[in-house]
Amino acid sequence: MNRRLFSISLMVAMLGMLAACATTPPPAMEPFQPAQLDSASFVSSVDTFAIVVDASSSMVEKYQGRHKFILAKEIVSRINQTLPPIDAKAALVAFGSGACLDKKHAKVLYGVAPYSESEMAAGLDALACAGGVSPMYAGVDAGRPGLEGSMGKVALLIVSDGKDIDQKAVISSVQNLKDAMGDRLCIYPIQVGDDAKGAKLMKNIADIGACGFAVNADEISSPDAMADFVTKVFLAPAPVVVAAGPMDSDGDGVPDDIDQCPNTPKGARVNDVGCWIMSDDTVQFDFDSAVIRDTTMLDEALVILLKNPDLTGEIAGHTCNIGSKAYNQGLSERRANAVRDYFIKKGVAAERLRAVGYGLNRPTASNDTEEGRRKNRRVELHPDR
Image 1 (cartoon, rainbow, N blue to C red):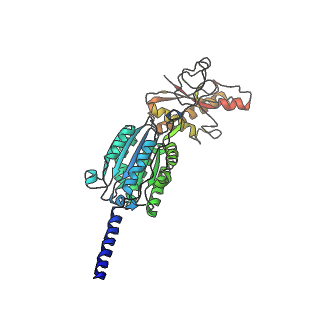
Image 2 (image 1 turned 180 degrees about the horizontal axis):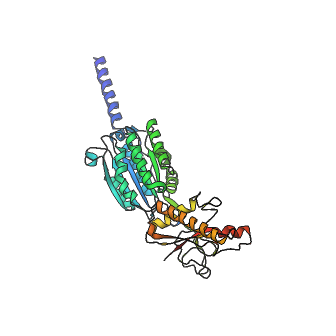
Image 3 (image 1 turned 30 degrees about the horizontal axis):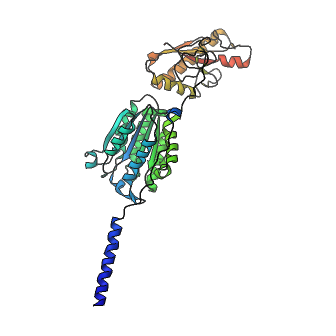
């Protein structure tokens, strides 16, 4: 009788232990208090960004005691909480299949619209569950129209475990988007979990973007790490406010009384007399050549031209006084046309730009020294407005 009572008591105790295990909640993520990024200290480095979230069945699996789907939503929420108000457009897209996404392979939850923390949060809250296959390519494709319609830099963030993905299809979609957008697109995959094949896929996607990077969600979950991530992806230092001085109407750093090009657009690099300039040592040409070797400064000017679609103007080629007047005239024209052709190939309408060569007739410095001659070998942009 005592043995029977003992057996019953033991069974009850074991059932109690099992019930306790079944009801024990998974470990909670550490409370998140976002680091404060002073909006006055930063400006947006992107014109548009899209966050693509994995809502497929593999995300229902647990990682460190919590569903990866919940962790993915939390990391997006932390990005959203950390971002200061920025002048950019944003989109939130989920991919998966089944009832969670209205029986679609991808669903736009927010945007493309001017970035709003509250509206981004509402779009994320609308993503209530995960399930089905993992068509990451569909998530990329769903966000593509809004990204391609932007004028400046674009950031694409993909939050996924990287599992059960049609790698050929997503690599093709990402590569097509990169081919269409070129250097304007940077890609930042964020892996949730520790699947080795998934990590490799996410790195391969980042490599296609060239200017982005892959990261694991664990690495950016803390407030300080998230602030660093947000700064790298979305922000640039705000321009330094110069103390009051001589009037500078176009804000190029050259006072109006000596500014020979008073309509220079914001952000353009100028020479000592305020003209939007690309000198021989920045737009690098080989000797006796109009082939551009370094496009760094051209790409800076391209961003300004693309952000100001109504801006028209003249591309002016200049030379120093070495060589005959006729030779320098032809050289200045060839180099001006080379710069114009570069902008046209990058998407600037041909009718917006005129290429004119001035040869050696308009020096900006003395031709008596090598330094002066170097300054005179230049290409300038003269806006019409």
